[in-house]
Amino acid sequence: MIRVAILGAGIGREHLDGYRLLPTRFQVAALVDLDTARAQAVVGADPIRIEADIDAVLADPAIDLIDVCLPPHLHLPISLKALAAGKHVICEKPLVASLADADRLLGAARDAGKRVTPVFQYRYGPAMAQLRALTAAGLTGRAYAASLETHWMRGPAYYAVPWRGTWAGENGGAVLGHAIHNHDLMMMVLGPVKRLSAFTATRVNAIQTEDCAAISFEMESGALATSSITLGAATDTSRIRFCFEGLTAESGSAPYAPATGAWRFTAREPYQQARIDEVLADVTPGLTGFAGFLQATADALEGDATQAVSAEDGRRSIELVTAIYSAARSGQAITLPLGPEAPLYAGWVPAT
Image 1 (cartoon, helix red, strand yellow):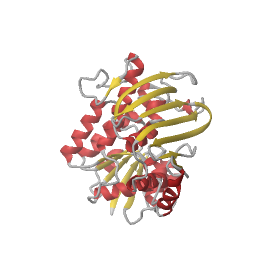
Image 2 (cartoon, rainbow, N blue to C red; image 1 turned 180 degrees about the horizontal axis):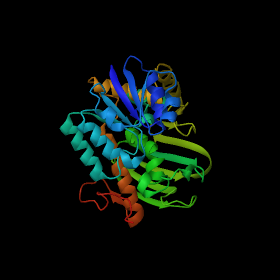
Image 3 (tube, rainbow, N blue to C red; image 1 turned 90 degrees about the horizontal axis):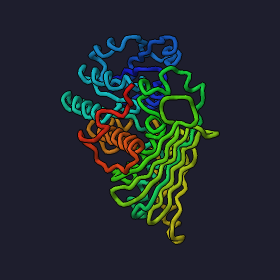
């Protein structure tokens, strides 16, 4: 049994719901929030200790795992403190605010002999299980192209929270905080990015950070992809389309969990559709969203990291953000991978 302390009762509420679906794998021992009344409302009747002091749970030898659900600027310092206290770490996105911080965090995890797991719950759902099965059956073939849409509505009420929309509080805008999940799915399916070009703009809200972006990717495989991002849509919509040699995979439009809804898999050659449908009929979807993510994390902590998100996956997401901001500011295509010599390696937050 893995004993957990959740830090933050905001998105931590959804994490707790995921843990509740895995009662034989996890025990949530504590929920930490400065607003203890909010934390108590999240916990309800569950026998979970409410704390206002992070250090109290870090010092508790019975806690195995710290789940960081705090504002982005706290992710690195709290994750480092948790590792130093001998705890495994789950950390909400974005993992950190620079490649330098990512390398520092990964080094601390190696030194501590503990696991750092970035939160990418979009990976877990029936659509990804179906796509893996179709690939294993040899029905996808080479990837040709993909398109991603992260078209959400965010207005003044959303940015009434003081740290939102600021470089100091969020460390970035829609590229970092909203599209990062779709970009992770893209790389999970298509592999590493070789080169990208990007435009970013602040057009919708009176904020410091970007709320619109258009990005083009060339993957190492040769596949091409585009990502369209805005916080000025009329509704919240996420949409993904992968075009393969053998079929096209299209998501629905659910904004927060595109891999959990029904996808359409259409054969390029109509005679192959029956075989595709046959494979899909045999797929067991498994747990979705946070529950699927946490199940894979528990498996990894017990020795099977096959389906888990790795710390390196988190670094890869931060590398991509670094490249996007670099491309948008320089007006040049950026080649990956990036190392310490990259212009924004130490951080993309503008100097004030």
